Amino acid sequence: MQALLDTHALLWWLDGDKRLSKTARDFIGEEANVIFVSAASAWEITTKVRIGKLPGAQEVAAELAASVTAQGFSELPISLADGARAGSLPGPHRDPFDRMLIAQAQAYALALISNEKVFDDYGVKRLW
Image (tube, rainbow, N blue to C red):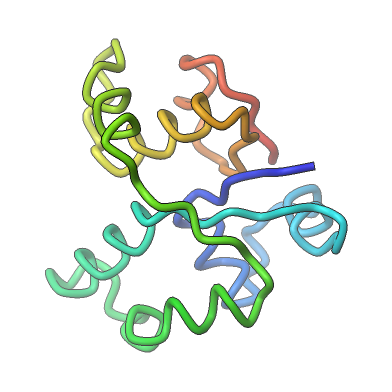
């Protein structure tokens, strides 16, 4: 199976944080599953580190590509079509990072590993 990590799920996985659900941990840890990390998560982490909203993630931001590779995760770049899909999504949800993750999950038929119930409103499968 394949899934896309929400940014908080990625950070919690890397930190061994207990807030990551057992279902999510088991899915991510299963070697047969393909886990994607969107370029949107790199953008979100580094932006939030820069503006002081993620002060504990400075090391992760600096070594994100190496961490993703070390975990065996796959990078998911952002295409022009992804950008157009994210910008065209209906509804009031305004977070640009979430909108990109939703658009990519829709476009590539990926489950989203996230605790954010707002994703359910967009018809994506959410694992938590």
